[in-house]
Amino acid sequence: MAGLRVLLLILAFLFSVIGFSYSKEPIKIGAILSVTGPASFIGEQEKNTLLLLAEEVNKAGGINGRPLEVIIEDSKSGESQAVLSAKKLIERDKVVAILGPSTTGESMAVIPIISQAKIPLISLAAGTGITEPVNERYWVFKTAQYDRSAVEAIYRYMQKKGIQKVGILTITNSFGDQGRKALLELAPKFGIQVVADERYKPEDSDMTVQLLKAHKAGAQAIINWSVGPTQVIVVKNWQALKLNIPLFQSHGWGSKKNIQLAGSAAEGVIAPLGRIVVWDKLPEKHPQKKILEGFVRAYEAKYKTEPGTFAGHAYDAFMMVVEAMKKVGPDSAKIRDYIEHKIKNWPGISGVFNISPKDHCGLDASSFEMVVVKKGDWEIIQ
Image (cartoon, rainbow, N blue to C red; front, side, top):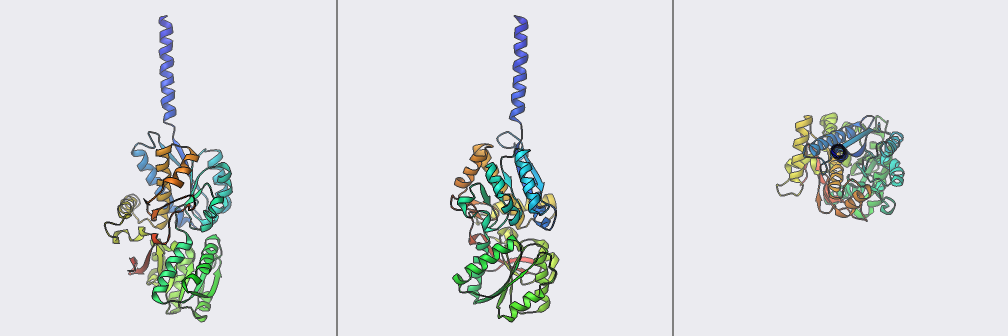
């Protein structure tokens, strides 16, 4: 009998250890980011943000007592690699949700895979087509503002300034395609005429010809739609030509590196940007002020540099998934439902989100400030 008691005690101990061990298994979420390649200036900020936030969550006890593991895959800024990364995260790592990818084209490429696997995806890119039509994007959300919202903010500002004729320059990739679509479709609504519709390739190194064509066509302002090095090239070309008409950039302009690379040529460039770049100029009562200040200070303390717009997209995506997991557990379907139904009046870095079954982004043009580059820094246009 004594031997049986000892055996039962040993078994009870083993079961308790095994049970405890299982309860401490990490919850895995995946991230597909452009850590290297042409869009690495986006992915670097996003990677830094996710590592920072994961560290903070785990220091605070994890998700309901379980550690959080963020598995970051480098898409190398390519759609094919993004697809391979999505398959790896789903099939091998068994993640419960995926953050990213960083760009519109990569996001569009992985949608069929995550939809079939029924894994929620929170893209960090801007293209409207990522979440629309929403009835075909059941598992897809995004935290970057719509490109049409950025266009609305620009056109509304132009209306106030009496600008009626514009020339648009757009890059020939998914981001440029969707920006161009919004620019052309929304112009009549604001009484604006697109007098020049010029395009350039991601590898082009001089857009002087396109700028001159727009100027010759009678444009009162230029709108450039791209992210990355081409944004800076257009700025330098515009400044060198001295066209004496304003230059507007898309919401992808919100990185201090762009100002540093463009130098004095960036002075006067206008763009609709998220409030992360001007957080210290907001009134104390602004609903985003506290969150913005906390994140920016934590990021600067760890990485000794300012976070840009793209870091904010990663912050919002991460925090939505973490909040969902704390409320409903690491269940992919429940995480999706929570984000769709519970993210209401939710102040984040990119704006105050109101996600619904009809809107898987939840931001509009009010999430932007019109910002001008002045003395090498961002300044809100009042």
